[in-house]
Image 1 (tube, rainbow, N blue to C red):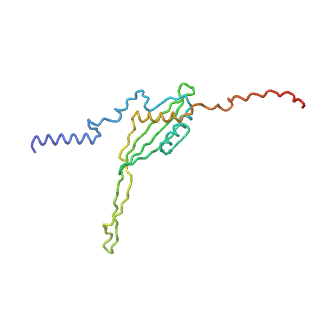
Image 2: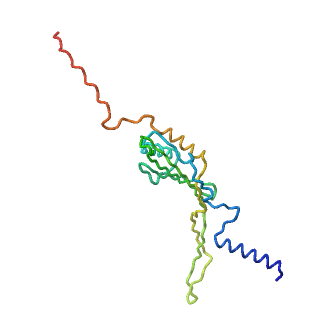
Length: 200
């Protein structure tokens, strides 16, 4: 083997070893490099309402857009919505968590997160086996096809415009005035005593 061919073989072997060791290609940045942990308002908004009222408005917002709710609590919920384009299927999983503000006032922060997953239809052919006397089982060309959905990708939606549209809709479903709490309602004023009734 020539020296040049040996050099190319060594380079290929080194590259294969790097890939086997889990090294990512230089043009494929690792996920954590895109996570800066900087302050942002993309995934959260503050509201002068209780967490329960904010999540209730979020629930109505998702339902109005065709989402199905898989887990809806007083302060958190999860919604799902499916899309189809040919043989490709997509699903958005939307999470909303409502927490009280750390200041202790009647304020809340709504945290949102949406993940888009991609699925593809996979066909699996199963050949049928038939027993033939002493010959044992023989595979025949009669096949049955089992279709299944295979998840091919998943990524958190990072579009600020996507979440801004959700927050704008949530605010439309937010009650403008809070009802008086139980026991805080102002009692009705007592009626003034009526004077004596005059005889006709």
